[in-house]
Length: 340
Image 1: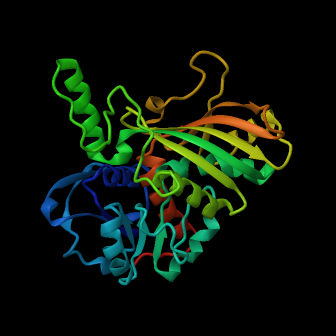
Image 2: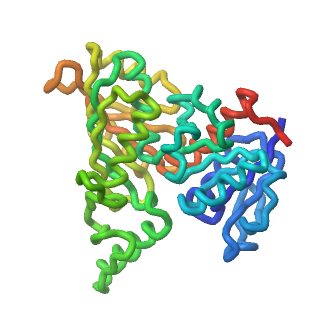
């Protein structure tokens, strides 16, 4: 069975990755449409060995497609996702717009695949935040075995998580420093080149940033309200690839070697954990890969049942584009969506 797909936001970083992944995974697609705003009408994007010309979002007929992979931001999704869904096209949205709507399932296929059946309420499925997606893939097998009590996570998030403007600002500031030009900060609140910024998204009344709030709410929505989560989210001068230092406290006694084996055997994960120089994965090495990589696995002796680990993933892939494609695959494989 073949289906047709529209990628909205096809000229952006994540939209281009969606097209790349659809081609790489031999997704059963009959027709692919690149959709963007009117100002990008006719712009060319790549899909495997083909070149697609962008079509105008406001003029496109979504009744002819089965899936819409939406990566155009929350404001666009708020207006357009319900309109597109009314045509019988299933919207898989990468923005924050629908993640907390009780009628819209929030899904990571390795974590809560059964929740995808709830898509029929609004014909929309939500993708989690990029930093949440990679963490819950690593937490899920551990939770199933030992029951998580509390998670403390610090993130080290690349500038591509802030879009093309974030990557451009890191590049321009780095160049400016080397040639002695004035440094401009427009996308980020402080200099990002050769610096780290403990601030992602807006501040909330309790002192958390919204990025930190997202990680708490989304983890609990997908894995259970009985898990306590606290996060500190930091922007770092890395172009692609989010890193996380994760401390987990469990209800049940944990065996470190067994935990390592569980992670090795679980979908979506690669364990690279050698206690030697270079025996771990850094963000540079995860770029272009599908997996979430786990390293530095070790007991936390300060609590009765504690574990520390380091995880990295390509945020444009598992954190966004790949997860969207996997949701579409899940819907097809379960017979929930068929070709028009």
